[in-house]
Length: 137
Image (cartoon, rainbow, N blue to C red):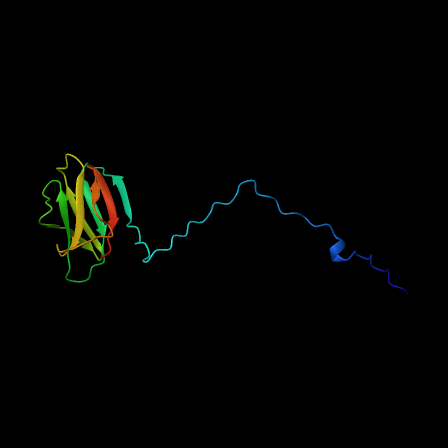
């Protein structure tokens, strides 16, 4: 008995090819700015409205055992000359709050009231909000 022969397929070069869909919009150009130093990582800032109307700052800062985080600025109980210590909550978490904010509070954070957190810079805390920031020294 003779086996039925399989139909012959044309060589691959003879088969029709599907074309890829063309893009109607040009791709955006990449901006590759090469500088002497890499840009600093952006500081993380989040804010939410508080339920009790208090103004709160919650900072994440891993500054080592025995160190403290301080706030300096313009607002109730704050000055630019001397810092107020933030309350230690847990490892890497610090809090400052006031119920007396009548307007925006400008502030900066300091490690041991000496070393400024330049990565975070000057921030503004709106009254009645909880603002969460991440500070790196």
